[in-house]
Image (tube, rainbow, N blue to C red; front, side, top):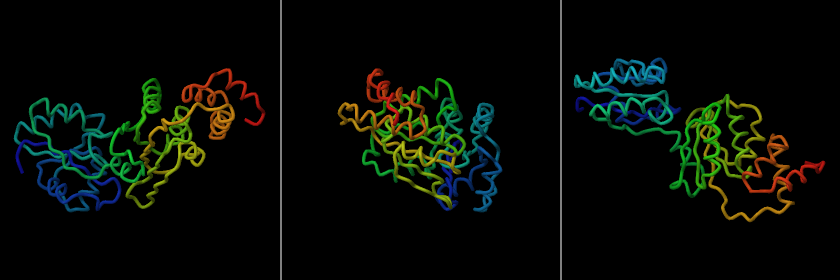
Length: 279
């Protein structure tokens, strides 16, 4: 193993066997391992009999730890970094450290492996998954950044991949339906490679109806491409769209706003349709 190198090592996203022989070799041979959560990572390392010294490097201390990493590299030490699950630096800590190490002129090498992004794309069933894919990662919890990203997702014609945890899953689905056609395809990947793995091919509207409460587990959401061949909707179609959005949990007002954005429908027409008692 060459000295003065930082290895970004992918670890399992669920099943402990989903780690490469090369990753195990690197973790056993480096001088030190930095980990997002040392307690979590020690379970993996102990499982494979790896006794390399481990120190924490997470979102809160990444800037300070990056200085330490560079100092160790200057001493010709070999270093590995691992996050709790998957590929570090991808919606996980590590990106700032890599930028700092590269800026300091040191070598960074990837040790590929498990990735929730790649796993979701591999089973989504969308033929276009090999191109025009927007990776969002985790949405901001609130505010303008979240709103801007939701608009970006709605405007993207291809596939969109995002991550979500159990506590905000229903809220994220609701926000997605407000900004996208409820019939837009969706592949929900829950607890990938774990005991309770679940892959569901559905639509945004159907998923919202099925998951009114926040279910357990970690999610990768693969949103299908936009249907760009649609013709302008007739009043009867708009009425059905309004009913579908309201049944999905949106207020009548929010449903009308969504159709103005998504289909360019006239507000006057929508509000007249909303006067119907059956919506």
